[in-house]
Length: 270
Ligand SMILES: [Cu+2]
Image (cartoon, rainbow, N blue to C red; front, side, top):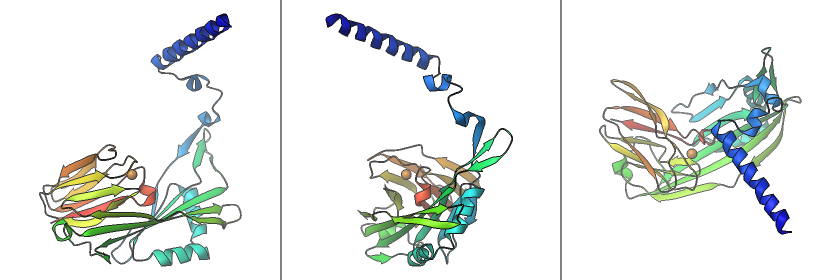
């Protein structure tokens, strides 16, 4: 019995040593098994197609990750339940993300995808002291007031072959309530609040993560002297990211891992 245990320990030791050696050589076992991964002969095709930009009158943003996903959205757009959801969400910030099917391209350049499409519809409604607010409000106007964000998400599954929606599920509503602070944007699952606000040029804005998930702030600051790309990197619970915006301009940003759920924002500096 003791001998067996010793042998097992020996086997484990050799296995661990082998694993470390492989990691040190930069190759994991699955990377060595070249014939194992059928995906090796194809590459993912991602072309992010913007279908509709938000406007002042209709704050709906629609995009698809590729041409096949765009077709999934076109099928979904004809569905009565989807039309009713969009009508109900009007007035909020709506994001429609066609995220499936994933398109793959083989070595001969043939594009392939599955028969199942997926469209995620997110509606963010935000309130200051219980009322919808004007995005021209400055941080100083809202500091000390109660901010409330209500996020609703619908998952729409499309049968590409039958050109029909086969399932629509609504997730539980996500609610964030915070006492608003000057020059602070709150990040929670998965939205920024206030998502559209104004500030003075020269302000230092701080994004605070109040959730157990990591978030980032990635976007373009379009100022008078030119565009600046900003990328915070990921920050976690109770961590923050801050940046000083010296000039008049507009900073539009999103969280790269939650963009499809409409985790984005705009700050106008004047
Ligand atoms: Cu995020």
